Image (cartoon, rainbow, N blue to C red; front, top):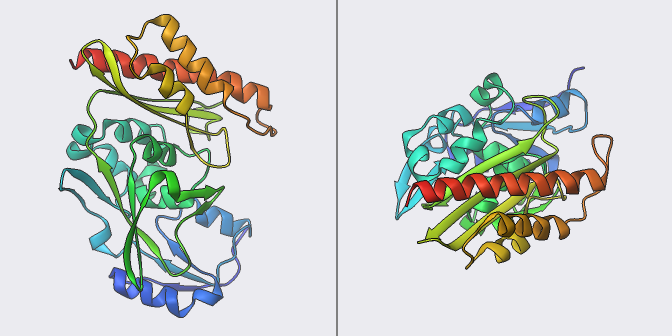
Length: 289
């Protein structure tokens, strides 16, 4: 299938892109940030924007840097570049690991970090990673920039805090120590995962000082597994504690069913992958002591 007719613009700066969006804010102008999700939707006519503003030529959005103790990733950084970035490997290894599980290399060669987060697919890897890492999402509009915490950014399936006429410009990640893990269950490699789990565990000696865990595929948005975090924090974790944390995290879920899995199946998978993610993150945290 082919998309309906649309106007196409390729600005070279954020200011130019914002001007185009504001001009056509009432005409359903959409940002193109790689196109690996939006273009298929357009081809099936599930999305019909009248104007595409392509950000691929905006070089200021395609950089990775460290600033004030934060890893700053421009929204247009290609997934493959972030996946293999030395800065990401050191400051946010959870992100690098999750990126390796996104679809296939050709998709990651075109898809962008900011595009995936702004698209807000509840089954996607990067929104869950942003939530687990307490990311700060920088949104830019005609009136300036604002920073939105990841916990406040995702409003529903494919819906975020980015308003019409605004652009997600940066993803800011605090440096986190300890161990990390991203694990997911998909029916075939590269397919959308039914459930994903992102975990970061920090130890103080043998005690869990901090646990951050997020799940994808179990709700309209990525969700924090707060009950699992509560069981782990302050504990000296053993097999029984890990099982209890996974049980607590799964018990708090109430996913809907679809053709891929029933609600009960998703909860069972979430329980299993919560345990796997916690075990792997904990093992890595212990190795780094």
